Image (cartoon, rainbow, N blue to C red):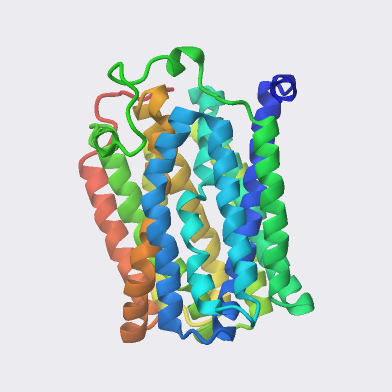
Length: 410
């Protein structure tokens, strides 16, 4: 099949990568939109649903860095194909759990297992990172955010609509078919490797390190230009991550929305994300240094936190959303860009795998911690935590800037 691959120019591969990412994310959000209803049908309460989310988070967290190493060593084609095959296994189990004749709850939890290997987004980020020059990287990675937006919008709408019209099995079947198609496309059209030959032939230390090499992963994390950026990424984004993990519960209880309305709200979120990642961040990154963008995202987080502590209706939240999405997107794109510039080209996949495990970290601790906070203090607590944490981060960034020695790659 290498003939068809050689026919795809660099730009073609990049576009195909965007398409694959959009397909995978649409399926993922379709699945997220039916999960609460499926688990209710199977008789799970909100605590068990929390455990389900946590299982997904833990597996993604453990799989992320390992998958990143696998992508660095086995190349893009293997990584994307593996990710899509894992996804289709997940949706197949999900389809099975909808059928009354089978043990639904067991299959629902079992369907989380393949998610350890579902990492289409980091794989796509690696391909884009490998094929773009450092200067155009923030904009190119930002465009992946467009795929994310498309995924949220179409996934949430399709999931809700198909669920209502044709029953809960329909979105899962569709997702299964689409991810199989994704696996076929990855296998036939994506080149075996996207790294340059010079990078390819120079594995660290002469011997080929194993995929499970935790030392190599930790070594990357502890690099002087990696750790501070990574910590800002984790700490600053954590409070809003908590809120978003609890969001399906909050929109049912606190905002009193029906399934369809919650779908529209998520779609609004997706549209904002597309606009900000596709149009705003690329423009800003050409005019301002990355450090300034990072600070501004932390500052906006703090302001939105104050608003969230005071909000009382879904309308208030809609006004806060643009700020929240701006901060989330800017934080992610800028830190990813800074992190990939801080490591050598042969390590970009591992670095992005680490970077991608930040979100599952939130999904792991989130449902349990978020549930406790929500039950004890209600919605305003999320705002208070976000305000305090980000003011602290801002103070630290102000006292100790990240780029002291003018080592900016421009």
